[in-house]
Image (cartoon, rainbow, N blue to C red):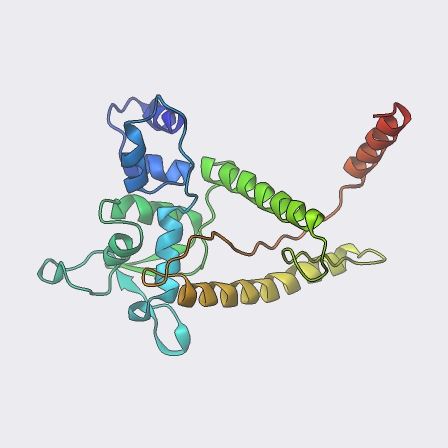
Length: 251
């Protein structure tokens, strides 16, 4: 977290908000406050749930923000002064409800606007156009997400390597083109899996929203990850040569 504060303070500002640090580190403002006093101690385990991601999840699952056929509704950015403290529809209320009462509305909105997940329609109204928050390329959030994805994939494979009974372990499936694809068909495949994959992920997210919420909390952290790979022949050849060399040396 010190690194995040240093980077944000590089422009000469002396005060760096907890919300800005949270968006860089994948922590909410409440988590940042909880760790500020222990920065010189061992680093705490992070909860990789961005305030922005939490807001998007709430926007897509809270019935107050859903219209006919489950479509998310456009909302005003701020709650009118007369309605403060009430459960009214606004972006400000979403942030307070799903990211925490101390999280800055402006900073979360700016992150979502930059990512393209939210659009500003003008006149103080915003529209949600994506279900997930994807941070800028090579940002701390993306680097952290990369590490988390690798950890989860390897963890799944490690569990399945140890299983002794068929049908146990964790779901692990791979399907690939037996005879390869042309560039034209690869483009078609990319469009196909984006459509079907997003639909599947949305269904899983809806299932989670019914079984994992403030009223029904569990101790087990679990989820589903999808990825599309395209083999790099040069990398594959180098990897095979490395394996052959180790085998020849008896390693």
